[in-house]
Image (cartoon, rainbow over all chains, first blue to last red):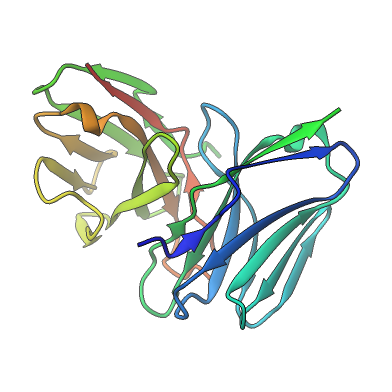
Length: 113
Length: 116
């Protein structure tokens, strides 16, 4: 029973263009959402987060959009750079219930030269 | 300020042996989380510990797996009588407080366990 779904296992984007990574969730109790970036042989590193009281959060080239009614969030990276090639994990937490973070399976982003 | 440290980075065990994975949280962090990542899968929560307490072990297999976070020293994830299906990357994360609205979990580099 996957509560956080990343339906695209991989995505290829031209350098300089916009990368859009999508994530859907099923648990309406989730109120905090995170994106992590992972390089091979390293642990995930926190990228950006959004609380359910907001619908957008921006940090430099990274913007996360949250659509609560659709239970959908997306991460936009613009412009995409070669160093953005990594696996991106969407994660969610129901902070009023417990501290578990539930992760999606990840999307592998390839930035093409 | 050193990050989350895990050792060993790679561990090879034969079926039936024991595996011990260590995690030292970031300085000042008192909350430790263990996750497992199977090939082609996301990270799956296993257990959440504070010093000398297991807070949530709902993701731990019922048998052979145990975790501790003693008053002194690193957190240990112990897998007894390993089987091939235990082969995975095990990640530890730490946070200074349980309020995720203000803090995120910081991950270590992981321990890659291979069971022959």
